[in-house]
Image (cartoon, rainbow, N blue to C red; front, side, top):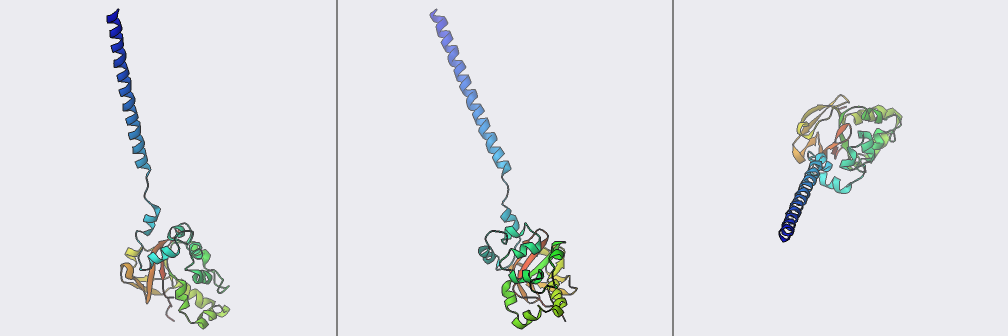
Length: 216
């Protein structure tokens, strides 16, 4: 009887050890599987993909001035270009000019939102450089064609990335602009690029510090 009892106890001990080992192995496999699943679902930051190709010495200041919201670098990527510009506090004068607020006879919103473009967008400080009398004259009905010519001179068909933007570009207005330099030193005619390569839903935008004027 004693031998039978000792054998039963030994068998129970072996069985318990086996069950414990199986439980530990199973727990280890579950943890490994969970870690693997977590790693596979990690995605790169959207911000990185939108800022990787930006050029211009003013990009950091832009990101600091408009760190989030619809007018930020990330926010602008969600909307067509005229809508994106209207949400950007750096582009209030340009928005007024293209949306009929400056001159009721000039409204380019539907056109700008309807296809793919590269847009050289003068910031508010660029318009502030213009003579006040010139700006006032653009509000007159008889100067609607002139305003439209100036605005479309800032727009190039198709989206052009910073890597491909240098050279002569033909604008929607029909004239050409000359993009020179590279990296943070890009120039469009005599205007410096503040921050370029900003994406919207249908356009690539280059914020510039001077309003471009087409040849008479």
